[in-house]
Image (tube, rainbow, N blue to C red):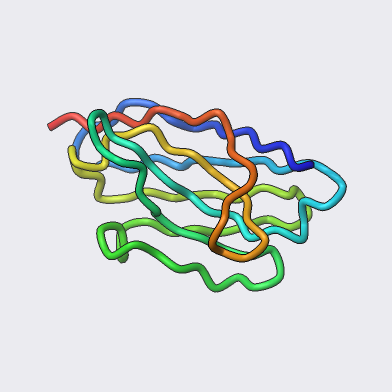
Length: 118
């Protein structure tokens, strides 16, 4: 069992920055790859980025590449999504999630709202 708790959402003007955090806990949490997803109103949930605890190389969706940075602090079992040059289309509820195979995300956080105003 893995528990995920996000924090750091809020409202920001276009061009601004926000940092999201996701704290993971549970006996096997370190075995999982951590992903970030988002869901905007009326749209399907979409993948944003993923990073492994053992491998610091993150992967990104094309829509956020170059603007978002996904990092992890293994000692704190926390992943961070640093979002810069935010656009109104980045407005969504952001979720962190955990997967063993980078295909099926078995555990999800509660989500945190990010609103970018123009």
